[in-house]
Length: 231
Ligand code: SAH
Image (cartoon, rainbow, N blue to C red):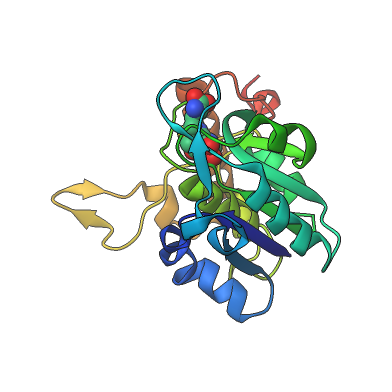
């Protein structure tokens, strides 16, 4: 999978991809994230990428021309499955959406800033808009990094324990059960006996029960795949 991120603040995207799982995924050749600075695509003096809003009002608007030139130069090199604008009013990012997008080969993520992008970018250049939650960030960079992380960890071979992504919260309509590690007792707080029993079937049943109870308590609206077990 290749993800091209377009931004006017490329520095904001340096650290998320230079450590841990996202770094290793790129080193293993399983994912490639390329960050593009919008400024060189501007034909304006001082390489401006934004301008005042028509009609007045506070806040700058990102201009269409540098964005169009950048997207066109990428499209001339390869075919893209989707050109995504990170936007608070886009489709909400969920695990099923992340699962679907992780199967794509080439994606462009456009990060907005200030008041956002000229509406004509959204009308004519973008194929999809994604929000990472009902709150407003100051730029799309962190949202793009969140989306990249959610997608790249799903690519087979990226996580060292390949089943791990499948046992995370949301994958089966359930939240994840509690987890524990050494020591088995701390300050008198003990790890549940079943986890120390070595009895795989009992541990599996306990985990399912806990996942179910946690889902019912915290997120009752998630699909109740485990209901049969309760009844
Ligand atoms: N004026 C816009 C907000 C602009 S915020 C509005 O009220 O809808 C500046 C940029 O941050 C946006 O262009 C977008 O790229 C990014 N952004 C802000 N919140 C986001 C969110 N929840 N999800 C994804 N991107 C977001």
